[in-house]
Figure 1 (cartoon, rainbow, N blue to C red):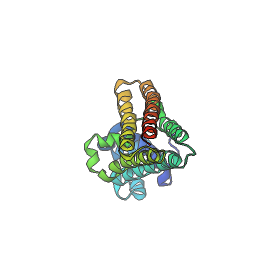
Figure 2: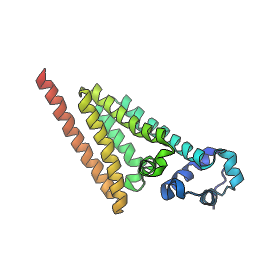
Figure 3: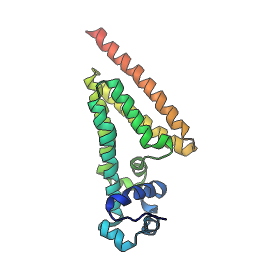
Figure 4: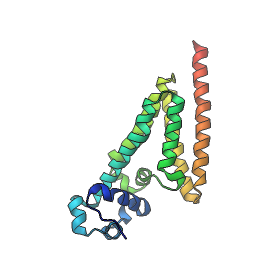
Length: 198
């Protein structure tokens, strides 16, 4: 039985999973109504802009979650190591150890990206920007910091796609663990090189 839904916030988790399962185009109002227990009139009352507004609200919720649980803790961590460790743990939690796809990534890979270009670009851009900034504060030069930040996001997203394609969520955890090790080795290399040049 569907719990009684009275506010937008109540329906967003259900919408998020529907968009993950069926994509933007495949998530019909009939499916949304069935999953939420709300009629079309109630759905339009909560989201006057229809499915477009629903997806916007879901993407805004994803942005807020990453800001609170990934980006802000990473920037405010006492050390680079603890900040990165927290980031990887939070990412593993959010993507349910590879069982949950990245909705923004899924939108980016389909024609849906043209409906939400700013949201899609901002999500990935913000992640790269924050990682680059904390690496820079740790002493990594701007260009290598950018390359490493892009590598982090690329490998997280690639691991999600591969885990989903192979139906082996364990691939995601394995890739995250390897990424942690590789990133630490790259950081050590960059920082040692910088010390030698002084």
